[in-house]
Image (cartoon, rainbow, N blue to C red):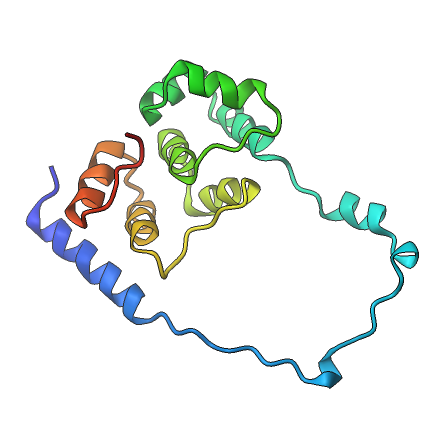
Length: 164
């Protein structure tokens, strides 16, 4: 159960981060522009080979192996059913919803950097301009991984729970 002091701290955190959001326009001068080389001159394969990071699926199961925990423990703790988890494990390019990845991250007790890495591997991020994301970031900064508490805090702000 979230106590009043904790909720006040959470509200201050959210307000501080939302009030600090400023959108800046980026202008490019013609000096900053460059002529692109024709595609055939770009060593795209080498670029991709050097830049390509693990897929979401690879990274998730690396974290599970690194934490030395069983799949059932993680998907149950995350509130995900076996069928959905099996889909994640067996379909190489399957990307679950952002909240599912956050729930898995909490179940694995990943730190902020690891959560960011896992979300990024699926094309997601946690934003300081999104109330839902700020609630998640608050819990990550406090190293609190209890999904029920996170859902209670999300509910406090009239937001949807991580897993329905």
